[in-house]
Each structure stands twice: as structure tokens, then as C-alpha cells.
Length: 637
Image (tube, rainbow, N blue to C red):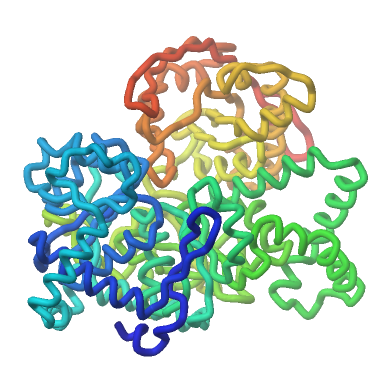
């Protein structure tokens, strides 16, 4: 409401529809939020109630969250790609009465679960396509909700203002369910005060203004996306742009040219893969120019970005030439020509991947946080960015390292508690009030936090040397041909790994060599592909051999899985984090075969298809041996 007064005519949101960007001003947002809040009130939404919001990034879903909060109620975003059965627990646990959804796909899920969710009384939908012949029942069109809201506003003109005035800063503002990597998902209640405090801290740190452009393309149910394109948007007053569809994000990035950008490592890996595929298809001359300028960028690009005065005039001139001929066009190809600040978070990013983006002039920085901490715990400051840290604590945050190496913290952005789970809330704090992050790391000499891995995942090999699986996996995933990797080795004499190939990158590689294949499973089993991946693994081993602490963590044996790891098969969370324990159990026969030194292993696996059906796929997987390095010599494992 304050933005509507201060900058009412400025664009608050844009949405691309049928190829044309439609703009909604702050004044229009304020008016629609009021009307929607009145409409939700007629559906029985009261302070403290939970309202589910399900869909891609759509302005109307954002407006629905604001209207819910205006009534003192609590929006609960759900992952739009989750199957109905996954949503059931959240709908039941949060006692959802009203759900605001995007389209027919999400309506079908709500109707499927209706009988098992007796509290669910109303499903409001945005996109009416395909819903013409659906029985009304609990369904309500978004336009109809606005009409109802207008009638309610006429009869009760001060209702919404009174509801907003009654909200306490320490009331729950939103509830996000954890990804459930280690068990059943928990509802994390975040207060208005906590969310606003963290958004203001970053606004001040990065000098954010209402002139920023942000592209909202990640799942709204992920706290990272929600903080950047919703909370930060409401605090700072910049413009949020909603792509036409997930498939058009790359094109829409070029249209908008975001100035403030956020991407988890998997997105940055995907963008880099596309670049490398295009370079593979380029002429020998272009590949040579690319490699020469990238060699220069790796040497001086990051130093120039950090305003290092020791870079020579000659190197600056060559880099400037490279910027005109390659770095600039490359940033444009990535849709990042206007990016002033870019963040990555969600999981650790490989140092090589991180250095690539910074070396071509993109101010990519790492941050550290979680759902329970309102995201912003540590953020790298300009001029003090290093690949191996996540920066110092943000203003207001205190960090300490426990004797077991766990990071513990206190912050104004801490959650109110887990919904209906006081035991889990109590267990998440130490006796003296510090929050258990579950991450292992330490503060280095200049006060920057270095994360090693999840505390539960960091272990030792049988010889007592350090084993940090995520670090190894990130190094493997830097290669465009490797989409996912899972390393095993705790308490074992050596490290072994599962590999998922990137179908697009490896498929392109195979086509250029005239190598026929009939899908992922067939391509993954090709001897030529095993040689390609073995070369990647060997390069990682050569790099690990130079690190005294991680020399023992070189990969001895690996196999290429016959299927892609998939959230629908419970192998990844909805935020694409590896569920390591589940994978080790599900594919136990493969893990055993790796460590027993077998040359192959038969596996039969149940998979879930997009239409909800289940099936079985089987394969006889080859187990390959990598090259393990020792100092300046190498020996076959």
C-alpha cells in the first residue's frame, strides 16, 4: 500500500502473454489485492488460516499471497511439479481450507485429494482453459472471486484496512515446507518481522532501488525464489517479471535483461552446458578464439571484476578487447548483459563454475542460508568474493562453530517454529539458544564462512582421510556432460560414484560423431560415452591429487546410471537436492558392486511416469575404473 502511494504509476509486475509483455502498476496491484482480500474473506479466510498457493510464477498467484497476508492469514506455497500424493501431507497438515491454483493441472490434483482433505472447501483457479465442463462444486474462477470481493468491499469498506491494522509483526507471514531430504517435511513458520528484516539488510548492503528488474522463474514454493521475487520485491519496490512459461525463460531473460538475478547452481550449470554445446558446433577458428580469450579471462577476469589495481595495462587492454569480441556477446547470449548483482545459493557451487561466470564479467556472488533463517545468513561483499567461502555474516547475524564442526547461529531472521511440531522446534536449537544449521564448516581468518558439506555427510575414509561427497560431486558436475553425481566412500577404503549424463550435451556430442542411440538408457551404456565420462572423472582426480586433504578422495570406480535421478522417484527433492541416503538404499546392489570391484551389475528399477503410472526398467550396468593420481605420477586404480 505504501508503494502504491509513493510510486503508483511505476511497473510493479510484468507478465508475458502470447509474446507480449503486460504491465501492472503498483496502484493496480494495491487495488486488486484489496479486492482479492475482500473476496477471500467471503470464503471464510480468517487471521491464522492457511491458504495454499500452487503454480508457476504468475502475477495473480502473487496477488493472492498478498491478499492472504492482508487478512492476517498465511500463504502456503506448494511445488507446482509435485504429484497429488506429495501435496496430500501438506494440505492435511496445514488444514488448508482455500487453495489458489494456476490451471487445470493443479485443479485436477486438488479434486483428486478433495475427499481426503475435508477442510478443503474452495479451489480458486487463474487459467480457465480446459475447465469449462468441470462441475462447479468447490471450484471458483479468479474473475468471479474479484466480483465477490467487490460486493463485499461495498458492504464492508473498512474490513481489509482493519484486518491489516490488526497484524502483529511477530505473526506468521508465510509457511514453507522443508524439502524433506532427511524425513517428513516440516512447515516452517516465518514472521513478518523476520522476512522484512532480512530483505532490508540486503537492500542496504547491495544498494537496491526501485529501478531493479528481476525475473521470477524458479518455483515460488522455494524460499530462495520467494525471498527474491516476493519479499524483496515488496520491501524494495522494484519490478518483478514473470516469464510466459518455463520453456521461454531464456528468451524472456533477453527481453527483460534483469539487473538483480538469482540462480541455484543447477541453473548456472545448465546455462554453461548450452554455451559449451554451441562452442562444440562452432568452427575451429571460433573455438580457438574462445579458448584463447577464456584462458585470459581465467587469469585476469576475476581480478578486474574485483578492481584489483595490480592488473597490468596490457592485460586490461586485452581483456577489454575480449569483452568486445567475446565476453560481452557471451553475457548477452546468457541474458545477463544488464546484471548488476547475481546470487547463487541452494547448494554448494563448483569453484570452476563460479570462476567461469565471474571471469566473463558477471558479478556472481554466493550466499548462505536456509528456510528457517529467512535465507540471508552470509553474503559475499563486492571486492571480497572467493570461490571457497560464502562470505561473512550479514548484519545482525552471529555465527559460531561447535566442537563437532557444526555451524550454529543467531539471527533476526529466525523462524517462529515448525507448525504443530514443538519437539522438532526445540531440537533445532542448542540449550543456550543457538540454531543448529546441520552444516559443517568454519570461519576463516578474515571472517568469511567456509562450508565443507552437510555435517551428516562429511565423513572419513577407512584410512582416516577426509571425505566430503558434495565437494567431489560439484567438481564432477562442472563438466557439461555430467548432470548429476553421487559419491560414496564414508568408512570405505576408496571413493566410488554414480553418474547421470546430461542427455542434451552428450546427445549432441554423439550426433556429431555419428553415434546412434535410442534414448537415455541406450546412450548411457555406450562404450564411447563411458570413455568420455572417464576422461572427466580422471581430470577431477588429477585436481584432487593436488589437495593434501582430499587426495584420498579420488574416484576409483564409477558407473553411469541407466535413468536420470528424478524427484518423482523420490531420488531428488523438489529443489533438485540429492537424497543421498535414499539413493544408497534404493541402489544398494549397485553400491555393493562398486566397492566389490565387479565389472558390471544387473539392476531393475521401478519408475513413475508423468501420468502417474509406474513401470520397471532394467539394465546391465558397466562399472568403469578411473585413473588415480599420486603426486606427479599416476597409476590405474
